[in-house]
Image 1 (tube, rainbow, N blue to C red):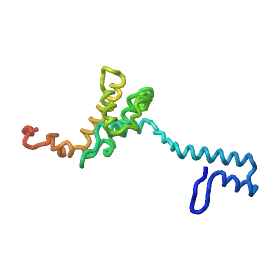
Image 2: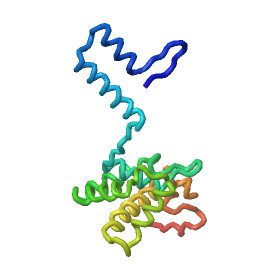
Image 3: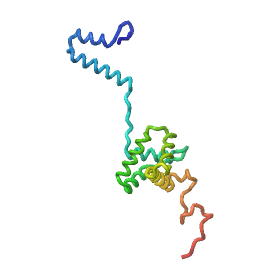
Image 4: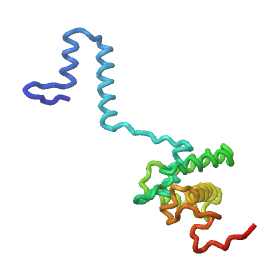
Length: 182
């Protein structure tokens, strides 16, 4: 395997001949060098496949990001750190087996490697109770918790058209009941 660079021919055989002539490497070392060059070329040609790490925090973050994505000026669940609150609630209320099953389920669907539209399809399919009630319950639990946290987070209120609560908890003075005298 040779190629021309400028006015010189350079290749693996030429490099090995140069090493042999200089006497720096024994035949065993040359064989090792050639094997390393072939292996390196093979890995370079195939490319390194980056493995996605599926841990609980990454999975819950990805699910919350698809359930409540950012839209325009309005923050999503990840921007408001709702995914961390949901994760803390899951750790407090669910056992390790339940959380490990969630990670395994998302890993089985290659959830983190999918495009956003495909992630939405996976969530919709998992929420279908006719297929598997346990999977639907796991995803439904995250859905319910993340939506509840989003609706009560003051950072999400402008996205909902809701202003700061008024006295007595009423958002509009025009609809407040008359005050009672003590």
